[in-house]
Structure formats: C-alpha cells, structure tokens
Length: 219
Image (tube, rainbow, N blue to C red; front, side, top):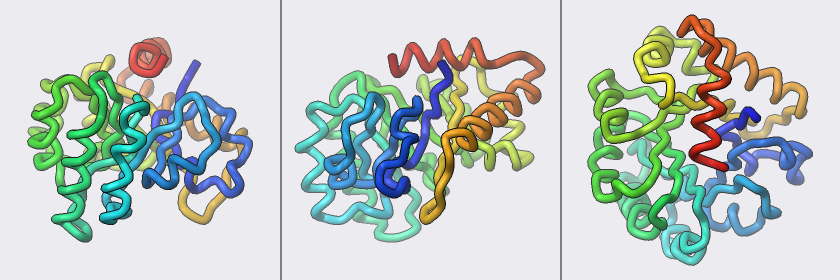
C-alpha cells in the first residue's frame, strides 16, 4: 500500500472523501487536529505560521496520545521567537517513538540543532530544500525526506533524490493547496507519478522499498 506521507486534510472542504485514502493527514494547529474526524493517520500539527500563544499552550493536551506529529517546524518567515517557542514545545511534549513531519525552509540547521534533544523520534523533513551538507547531517542523524512533485521539478531536488539512501525516501503530494479541491482519482495519479519520477531518477523501481519504509514507520 502506497501512503501519501504529507497531505493537507485541513484544506479539504467538508472533510472530502479523501479522508478514506491512505494519507498522513497533516494539520496546522491543535484546534485543527481536534475538529477533524478520527482517521488512521491523523497528525497533530503546530505549523510555524499558526504558532500563536494559544496554539502553543493547547498543544500538550493532545501530544500525550498522538504518535503522528505534523506539520511542525521552522522557516523564520514571520514571528521568529514564537516559531522557536512552538517547535521547542513540540519537542518537549511529544512521546518517544513519535513520527514528526517537519517544515524546514531556510532553517534546516536550526531544526537539526533543536532535534538533537530528541534522538528518540522519527524525523521526516518534507520537501527538503536545504544544502547538501544539511541533508548529509539529517541522514546521518537517522532522518528521512519526503519527496513531492515540486521537489522533482528542481535540479537540486532531483540531485537529492539520487543522493539519499533509498531506505530514507518517502513520497508525498503536499496537496491540496489552500482553496483548491482535488478528487481521489487525481490525487492517486499525482502520487503515482511522483513515485515514478523517483524511480526514473534512481534507475530502479522504488515502490517496494518505499512501501517497506512506510510500513516500518506508520503501520
């Protein structure tokens, strides 16, 4: 079974039929997590853009029982101090063995520095866009990267897909965009096309390895 490891359930109007598709459903805040109907792969999020004082205070209430955490991370695009406080709270509260889906844009080193306090969690940087040295550090620390169509559209992204060990690769769509809709058929097509793109770059069928990695992490 192929799983979309980064999907925005928050952006599906009325909790669309995609709720039944094997997706790791990211949320943007503890409130967003709390109002969604339960799904197998629902993740508790505290996205840096939504890291209000209220959201930071609310996060621990759900962290005790949530194994999947995301979307969380840093990008310093706005409210730097609040973002750092939010990510620190996430790392303080999540349980050992938690799986983190991490947003790290122009902040990979800061994210990796903070993650050093939690070697007991699985860290997945979605849509990795840092430097080659940062990628090497992340992989050496046991991390994974989740690849989407936009990553495959860049020269650097394609190079990283070839550089990373096959057992550290995951596949995602990062869909839907805010305000857009997507059908289950279109979602499946994009996810499969992304997997095919990874396989083409590496010169081998990556489905068996990626499914094995997903099973070890999520099932």
